[in-house]
Every structure is written in C-alpha cells, then in structure tokens.
Image (cartoon, rainbow, N blue to C red; front, side, top):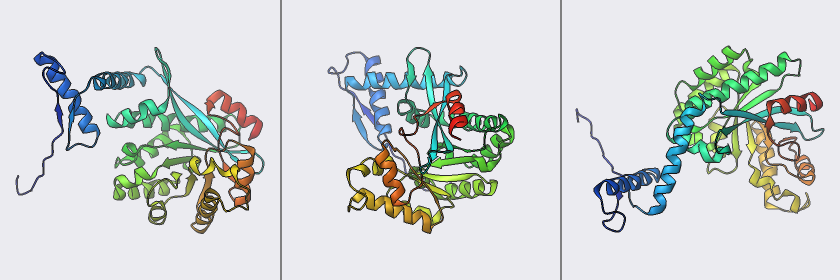
Length: 319
C-alpha cells in the first residue's frame, strides 16, 4: 500500500445456532461479545461465546459508562498514605491513591476500574486530575504552614507513554504553584517496557523539570536492574511481596527474602537511588528492614490511606 507492506490480523468471535440463540440479532450480539473477549486477550485469535461473557461484558460497559461521568460529577477522591522514616516514624512523604465513590454502588476499589480506564484511555484525563489534585493538596499543606513534603503519584503506562506527558506535568505544577522537587512520579516496570524511547525521553524531561521519578513494585519484573542502569530514575520501591515474610526468620538467618532485600539495599546504594519498602504491617518487619539497611517505608503499621483531612492531622502530629 503506497510502497509499504502491511500485515493484517483478526480477532474473531463465534456463536453457535441454536445453542446460544435462535434469532439473528442475539447471535450477532453474542458474536460481538466473543470478539471483544478475543481482542482483550491480545487479539489475533478467536473465542467462542458463552453465557458468562454476556454478564461480564455488560458489567464492564456499565463501569466504562459510569467512568465517563465520574470526573464531571466529582466522584473521585484522593486518599494519602504516609511514607515514614523507619527510625522515628516521622512522615517524609505522602502517596496519593485514587478512590471512586459511586453514587449507587458505593466505594469501588481501584482494581475494579483502573484497567478499564486504561483500555478506553479514560486514564489520561483521570490521571491528569490525580496529578492536579495531589499537587494542589501538597501546596495547600505548605500554605497551611506544614513542613514541605513530597507527594507521590502513580502513573499508568497509557498515561506515561504519551509524548506530551512531561508537558502535562509542567502545566500542572505551574497551575498549582507547587515546586517540582515536591512531586514524585511512580511508574512500574510495565511502563518502562511499553515504549522505551518515549519513556526515557519523558524521564529525562521530568528530571530536567526537577520532578523525582521512582520505579514502583521493584523486584517483580524481569529486567529491573537493566532498566535501573538505562533509565534516569531517582529511586525504587521494594514490592510488598518481599516484605511479607521477613518476620518469619531472624535477621541473621539465610532467608531468601532477607537476602533479596539486602541485595536491593546494596543495589540502591551503589546506584545512588533512594529506597522505600512497601507493605510494612508489623513491628518485626520494621526492625528487620532497619537491620538490613532500609530506612524508609510505608504500610498499615504506620497508617492506612486516609482522606486529605485526616492526612493533614497526621502531618501536624507526626511531621
């Protein structure tokens, strides 16, 4: 085509007459639902319809439709979970986490709607709102006389691989008046693997702005160490799966998780990266991490995510 060779794939949905339906309209609808499932599984494949699909797809479409109205209706809210100095429990940063307060179905957890928002690209306006609200709140804390702390925002692969993402961040900082050094952008290795050139470019632009960037869920991906060397990142967060079993062995024991966490601590030190441990739930885990050389963490031991008003009180007490 105009001198270019194109390769075409297909996603196919299949429904059976008379097992699934006996009228043309329903058969077409069933085949369309099955095709949608095939596309969601990566495309270039076929899928047979079954009755369970219909309910799942209807629920998903309902969530997508409600998501499109949620921003307009101010149904989203940010909760904040503190990152603390493990030596004295002093709050050193806040992670902003989105919550959806649905008017009919109540609180909908992020794992029920984030992936859908990514698929239909609603995550881009939702993500911008999160950035705007988190930066606004961080600046408000400063204006209230509280000690300035960094606010961390999780950014999806869809959002971060937009070529103008760094410009969006610059605009948000300008609109809210927050200095770039008080914003931290967290990405996962999934983000890094999407489009490495765009990701590297956006990371460099963020660094030039003065924004801190962190690799979240570290240790769960395939080539995290390679990315740490190649990408201009500022820090890593140890995934909670490595923290969960730390208390089951003494610090001197040759526990696999303890050895891995110690390796992460050394790696971060050698690469001059900051280090935060996620998912700390017990005092034993806190002491264990300190003995391994990790001095910052977050988790339910210190505080669950709370609304901005409670986070403000927490900063006044433990800032």
